[in-house]
Length: 515
Image (cartoon, rainbow, N blue to C red):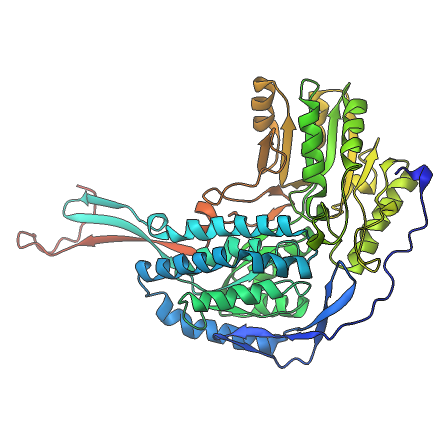
């Protein structure tokens, strides 16, 4: 549907509230209610109904969780690598066997379709499997006779209590980016999931204990900004892993750094897909639809800006629009292609960007405000939206929308495309579609972005590599999971040793040299 055929779309109306389940915290191996007296609503985005009432932790609740983690840290850091990996193997088996249950919880609270939720679980499991091999990743180095009779060797040791703050869009995958590696390295964890969809994190914590993780090694506190700041300020928290928007990532990095914590704060993105004139346009159109509208665009790796190098724009836009016509937006439990947005407030925000794009002069080739969903009319619905002739000064280009809105920017050359990508303040992910190997190699060398795809629209690395962007998409030096994850959750130590030898000389006040 185009802008010329718009119908009135009032958005979700007030829906009846079902009996809301009370959702607390998970501390020292059991669920607790907390003491703050504050609560937040959890909704089923496909129906608009409130299904949960989640406790919002205050500083006192956070302190209880950190204290439990601190007690557990004293023994867990000394647990053998064999014991740690045995727990992770058992946890992996539990998640694998119950993956359908986990996907159902994701869909019920976040809204993404079941197939997408199952894919999220799988990507999280890949990090669990990497952490099962932590013994190899933690191996140090040994050098014999660095000086006469003197050996040197390195080792890595846990930090202690660490915090993980995860976003609403990946309630399973993002916690699993950090928690398995942190505990495998001998740390204890306080996880603060998004208060919008907390159910999956609580299940993961319970399953970890079922797998043999001692009580207190993994704790979950639900909450909002108050809980986040309490974790950032707590003196016993040694490190913070965060994923979320750039403004909050900047705040987390600044505040945690002031209190002497190690920080990896992954922020927002404006990911570009560059299509060169020699590209397979059908492949590029498929990729644009998949990467632009999967999970309703609520991915930090979603493609939201398609850069068409002329003369391909007209043909490419037509192909994308044709594919969008076959998409079915609706309840993720009904086999639809795309689900709702996560909350009514977020829906209103994204619709505002669509309205701003129209007002700024972008051409609405497909207008998602016209969608007729396969689901409850009170759900938080916005269909896939395609804008053509977007310019870099429009808010639909400059801002991270975090919704199913794809904008096409037309440029005249490869150089102009790369300049556009590099001028953007974000540097999370990008992709180029081309059949020219030389152009692809040049692109990967010249583009100033942390994760690059060549004919791959969403270049999320496998677990044994590390995930992270450049520029305003990352605050801190180390990326998530892989080798960077192991380095983040451990401290290096170098030992220089000499054992008494009956042949040793005696007192020598000279400066020691490597002889």
